[in-house]
Image (cartoon, rainbow, N blue to C red; front, side, top):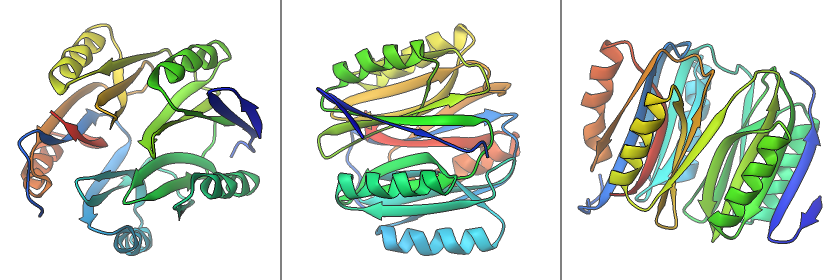
Length: 265
């Protein structure tokens, strides 16, 4: 590991291979067309060990885990079929250093970290064997301003921000160096209304929303070109139990769910 003041960057070469609801609490589902997904489903559980049982069961049915989100005392797993990673594994640890040790082991086994989530005092990591990624590195930041400064550096080095998560007072960023070319943008907003305006602005410039996260009172939206999506949309709702009708409506309109986020309005 290479230590840098105010941030930690880890580099690894890879083989190419129904609770009560508060008025200001919202769930956001990001949908897109032309994702390569064919079938989808999502399930939520109160505890992570309950969700991992769901993951194992879904894997046996041919699904891949494509997104994990924790919010308002619930773990949510999004499962997809179609153009998805076929070989996956996961880990969870309470200590971040222990978690990163597992990440290094998985790298040596040819996996990349494709999703990271923090909730219920646990770090959850999803690993997949995917082609087209030659290197992966991580940044750990105490302040979002440090993250923004580091992001500019990583972009100049040819890395793409693939995932971002806030937990235990720190921001964790995943950067990939890919054979596919991307142009990225980022928005950091203090409230959901401002975040929505930023999303609209980026859409008008031809970007697609690739990742949406909430942490320490801020909405962070990551945008990409060359995602392959033909169009996008999002839905926000207070109670996740009411989301199934929205998802079914979007699925019937040939949209697929690409990202879950939870935060404050």
